[in-house]
Image (cartoon, rainbow, N blue to C red):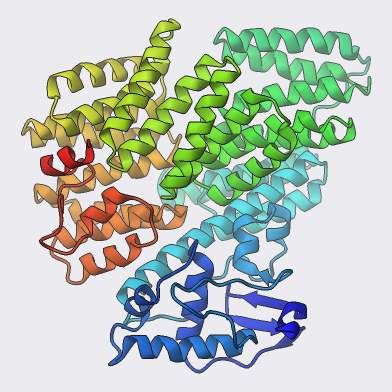
Length: 627
């Protein structure tokens, strides 16, 4: 054990796997299953029961538990510690200072992750496990997720380099990103912006032309406005006659006032003038405040503007450090986390939130905002018990800060977590408090969020007349302000309502509207998965020809985002379609997800309360869930 405590352990699982102990490469194991075990244990939170591992990887063996024991012995030899991975359940605890490439990719900084030589390679590349279909499903999901994480890391590193003025590094990183996924508009926009900011207008125009030709050839469409406008990006340079911090302060206040009044474009224009007006005055504090306000405003607009938001927020962080006022960086880190959360980059979002929390100090309003986003992240990835605790704390802190609007949102997302767990009474209580708080303050459109979830509670409870009133008001409020996320949630609820009334065709139309809303106006990726899951359930129940394709889309989306619950739900839908072994695979995939409502769906036949009935569940399940 003394040697284990001092041993430098390095684990590479991206590409061809290998392990180094004290810089010396360990001999390969016998067979591929030890690598599969290691990948699963490293990619799964918490301890794993031996029974689950044996079913996942050795169900075809004459003695599954015996096969697991043999492969664990091989893994201990590979890791160099005969005492690791004992007992039941199994928990992998590596020595301090160990390096694991997949962990560095998932939770390290974008710059650190971008240095990985195997970035972009598959997890345990070249290995497949055809006799272990449940593990194959998990592995495919994890590979998709790590590929998406690689793209997010490169994007973050390129944006940070651009904000720091390291334009050549930004160009190199963005070029790697485009090589990995040339059809992603945000990747192309970032590379074009990097060329433009570096002052190489010719390279920016050439990249824009190449992008337009690629999109025309492959997609039959032109790139969007974010790509075209990137070629016009430039560094905000001081005016020939600096106007000083006083003018910047005036423009900053004007911009903040315009944003508070809902005048987005006017507010953004004032904030950009404030940044320019700071000029050569050297007032980093005012510039940081203006950049923070600009980045925050852009972060809460369409996803196409998140790249510009991230650049402003990264510069805010650098300036706050230079000005010796780290507290200014806390909201910048939080807003960066928001953009990552919207795009379902949960590891990067959690890292940003940890940085924000370390700088936020005792201020209850900021702490409430951070806890809210942490709770949303954990809900999205199926860690419900943790998320509920954080969201309850965020509600209390928002109340202590007197931040009524934040309290409405905290209660809304707490209600969502309760709803997804099937805890209808607790969900109703939180959501009714949120609606009541918004109404008493005279706010109309913020009610769209809690009302959308409340309407679904009412559908599950069978109170369809109340659900119709609630959901129609939610949809009207969402459409009034053009919030595509809220609109999608309300339309999804109306689809569930119509199906509960026996109108399958109308239900399908509403659910397709909800799903397409999330695709044509990308906002919160979780909402895409949530609406697609409901559409899959409807298609399966009513034998629609589109069902298999929709289920494939759900599995792919859940896999690349790390929303593993939706991968499990995709296999539940396949089970209802009659796919052999799909229910068993769903059960194994769901085992690590903390959701009682999901576990009821994957229970063995005869014990299921709501098999094949999708997220809404059966009326019998509704009654039990409400207690």
